[in-house]
Image (cartoon, rainbow, N blue to C red; front, side):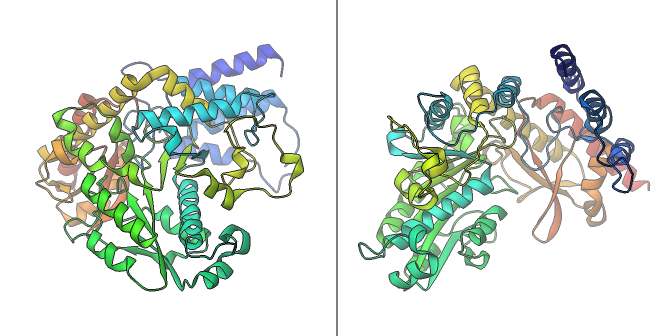
Length: 502
């Protein structure tokens, strides 16, 4: 394509994605657009199946056939499914630069490109934004694909640490001699992951690193607060003979947004126990950790309290593509010592991957999963530079205010109840997730479908206490509390009335 054609194509992309101020894009494309897009896909039985269409015809196909069948997660302030952040305009621009210059950020080459130094700068800025401490306290820091990748890094580093600490000097590491041999030498018969309502990716990570999904043990504080970690039970588990443990803390739990710890004293106790029993503390802070950026106000005091002390962990995962509103995929991983990452992830005997490193920045391929890496740090760097601490704090506050407005709208509608407790204190207990259901069991079974069919707001279906439930997750910079309140109230009222007269 000529440069003029590329400029025209870029304008068409922007025009198709732009939403006018005060308007809301549909949350879902609709069955007609999905059917049209499916019909436009290549027919494997056709004679021209792999015939070249050329750039212009291909672009027309993409923009006219495929794009209309995308959902509205980035273009709608009412797409509240999963925990799906939108993309800030500055982050989109930065991501376009990433594609245009296509830096493979794998090796630190300070005389050849600035990219790894930008990545390191972004990670240091994040540490300070989240008030986790100085960069020197978190030598191990890298970008990865998201919470799943970061949880794999956390469990892999934790596995390395808890086994190596029990090995005689000179016995080698897990990364060197293998899991089975290292456990045999260390006298370890079992590795367990102790958590409370841990995210499903935690079990996936346990499988990937060889610990096993069955090793993940849920230790709920009570039936009323299953998201909260029972620290007495943790202590009992840590005392088991020939067992090594990783403590995985949810901040926050995916259905309710609640936190596994209640404050600094919980974390101090867990830190003492982990040190005593040579355990590893990993925090899954994918979205909950951003509550630390909220303004210091009475209405956010409980969120600041439950976030206190999380910095005492050994490793932490964060999702940039959630509340920070940068494009997919974007995960961040922090740990105390980069040496333990190197023990697990280094590429040995690869001379062609050598670095001319003259600084403290390690080549990313030796401290993470990927050798081939997209420059996903640049959108994060751009958002941090553009918005600063105050701008990001205000964005987080808009999300919380909007979530609480949604909760109040639900509370004001007959026939619906907030979960896990209908009488919860919205101003204390709601962060960015709202969980609810219809009191009528029959309506409750189809409630998610009815909401999403209306195409005014989009939600995720889940279950709570053995029954279907609706989860709303406010994670977009487009959050608008008044619009959200009115939309939810009108929609739920209409759904109830239509159900009664069906």
